[in-house]
Length: 432
Ligand code: SF4
Image (cartoon, protein in one colour):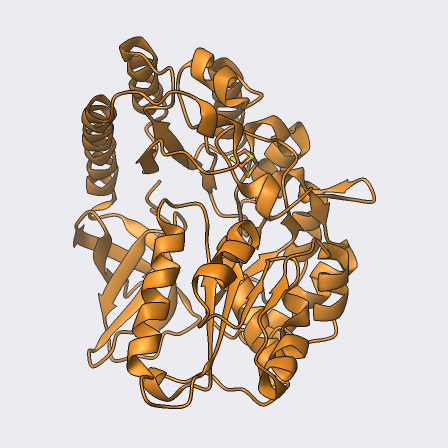
């Protein structure tokens, strides 16, 4: 979502004559768009600002703005501790970016903009064409979260759930397509909670799929509680454009821990969704998020998490040791022993890696459909992604940007697959 926000902040800045630069030591303005999900996000901001300060020692100070969720969560603290920061702007206030920059060009007092004007934000942004022209682009359709998982900062940094109107989103998709975009990932902190005038995510996906030049659609991140039958049906009826990789965070395989986290679903309910989706489209595969070592997690809870991992065979897992976020209810709980949590994380990640490698080996010598995004610098190689978002590289002199090709996978490692373009483009022996 920060990538989408960064693109839109740039669209705003362009309209007051700012341009992106790679000459970072000559910039007039720095925007640090931050994420608060990972540990030490704030430290990273101070570190980056330290670097800017050093580069500009003895020169005219650039305008320095911190945007995003760190700005939202720690705005006053940032301004207090680091006088080099000129403004903090929260994720629901960045539509006022230009106004802040104009103020800062004239005077140097610090500004703190961390309101929750999400409707006003999108009303303002709608007047500005989304200029992203990547082959694969993001589109924020929903923001905020009402779920209040006990470990998570999102409800406090992005605010309550808000869904954008369908017609506004279809228009933005058409704008993206006119820039050359072929694949759109619909974004929301709780994307499948999308609901506008009683129209849900399933309706939005169907509407956007009608746009001829959109070749691929994805959506992230979903919550199991909002995975309703209509959304499962879209995976049955829209196999051509809706990609078969579903990111469905589960966090733990223990019902006791899920309850402690306030996740609002059980392991059994989660598995029920997986089975229904597999029945709707046998080619679907899953990725997920896991928190290891949540307060109160026992060996038995952890072994249940491993069981779930082995049962679903997720092709990608994002796993982290639990670490408290200030201001969340879980921050007041007693943490489990760090070394125990670390050992469990290593076991979990090794198991996840084996599953991933087994899955990847099955792709070798099969055909994948790859949407190509960009040529690799100084090489006759092109980078793209298959239907499951796996990175694929092929050797070619041809410009493949924006094209979908059948690729024979020859080999690969943990991160990248290597292949050759099929001479015959109608093999239809696709990897699943
Ligand atoms: S559903 Fe996701 S965004 Fe919402 S509180 Fe839980 S973890 Fe955070």
